Each structure stands twice: as structure tokens, then as C-alpha cells.
Image 1 (cartoon, rainbow, N blue to C red):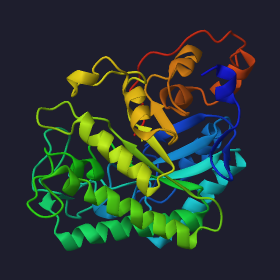
Image 2 (cartoon, rainbow, N blue to C red; image 1 turned 90 degrees about the horizontal axis):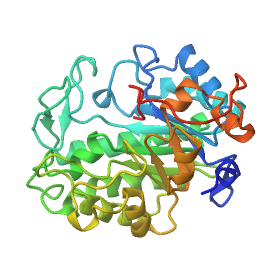
Image 3 (cartoon, one colour; image 1 turned 180 degrees about the vertical axis):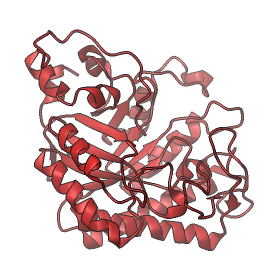
Length: 351
């Protein structure tokens, strides 16, 4: 895609147009108050970083205290948070961008300090092999239903706060991915075992939040889904399984699919037959005309043009230089130097 096309308007769906195809990736900047309330630092960050992008995705808003992914994350877990979320959405809109709230439940990827004493839960009682995490309790079927209700309630709060949509965080080994993965989901009921069973949680969840949006939103409201294409651990979630999930998500009506990648054109590791094809190209074949977003090392004009996607989620580069899209349009940096290349890897990654 040519740079000029990237910088032009892009229509995701009817009556939902972005100023350009560059998206502020969902960064968890961990600047919220101790109870998850929106802070002044949150407001200032998004005021600065939403000015030149088509869409600003606020990262990792947890839907319940037990689902908090890290200290300083934003909360969408109770109605007391709506005023702060409203101010945040207004700030993003005033800066000229669409405002999306990414909703997450950590599942087993957290601990009782981060959840402030709330029990850590997961599809199965299997402790994660990385991170400062606790041994989780296996969710009952009733508790699974409760979490779906919590996502629905958080969607309602996003609508009341004036956001233009939500993104369901099904990537980075959080709860949605845990239900999909054979490594973390070893249930023996209808939510575990076969791929069809492991897909039930994300499918039920998408259907529920769509119903909330249809009932409550009085303006176009989009629902995106972010996923990690595969797990590299032996016995983990495969590309094949996630391709099936992506096709089902398209059929039930998500508005865009976001791929959480380290490199925008990376090759798959869990499919010998497809290992010579870039992951975004593989998903494009699977989902057809469903709007596709990619992330990962999108830090130069050439990388943006080479990425095969409808929307380009930029993290590190925009974190350091929120005026970058304008600089791309003029060919000059804010310091007057020509735009030539990218930036080295940093520890600021999309969530």
C-alpha cells in the first residue's frame, strides 16, 4: 500500500471512517490510579498521542479485579469508573481520533498482589511457566458465564463513556487465548478438549458484547478482536486453530481482526505447509475482506508500505514521536530532518 493511501481516510464499516490507517496500538502505560481510575497522566498521554492517528486504542482495561493484568492498568470493572473513562474518550475525540477501549481479563497471567487479593482464575488449574504469576483456580461453568457478563458490563460502560468501540484482548496469553490453548485449557467439560469446545468462550463472548452494542449504542460502535496467531511452545495453540477461530469470528460479525506480532511480516512456526508465507497474508486468505490490523516493527515509511493490512498499529514509534504521521505526510521530522528510517527495538510493545 502506498504511503499516501495509508495517510488517507479509511472506512472500516458504514458510517465509521478513520482520518488515516495509522492506529495507536494498545499500550498499557500503567499510569492509572491504584484502583484503576483514569489519571491525569492517562489524559495527557492520550491527548498527545491521539492527535495524528485514525484510531487510538486504550490498552488493557480490565473487566473485573481478578482480571487485572498489571499495576497501573485502567479499570472498566465498575460504574464508578465511567466519569474518568468519559473524560478519556472526550480527550481522544478532541484530539481528532476515534476512541477504542481494549477489554481484557488476565486469567492466569497475574497474581494476588495485582488483583488486590482477588483470586486468580483460569480455564484450568495450571500455572503459567513465565511471569510473576500465581497458581490459578479452575473456573466453574457458572463463573465462566459471570466473566462473559463482566465483559458485557464493561462494554456497556464503554458505550456510556462515549467510546467508538471496544477491542477484545484475545492475545498475549491472557484469558481468551488461555481458553483456546491446549496448554492452558485441559478442561473435560464443554469448554475444553476439541477445537470446537475451546472456541466456545470467545464465540459466546463476542455474541454477548455484540448484543449489548446493538441494544445500547446510539451511534456506530465497532467490535474488534486481537489475537496472537500461534504459540511456539510444544503442544500450544497452532496457527491452524487460530485461522479457524478467525473465520468463525468473521461469520459472527466482528468489525476487525488485529494480529499481535513482533514483526509485521513474520513467518509462522507451527505450520510446515505455510512457513514460507507471511502471517498477515495467511489470515487475509482466511478472512477475506474483514478489515485486518497488524503490528510489529512498523517504524519506517517503507515498513508501513510493505505491511499487508488495512490498518497499521504502531506502538514504539508513536510512543516516542506522536507527531510521526504528520511528519510522514510532509517528509520532514519536527526537527526538520528528512524521514529516512525506523527506530531500534525498545521495551515498549503493544499490549
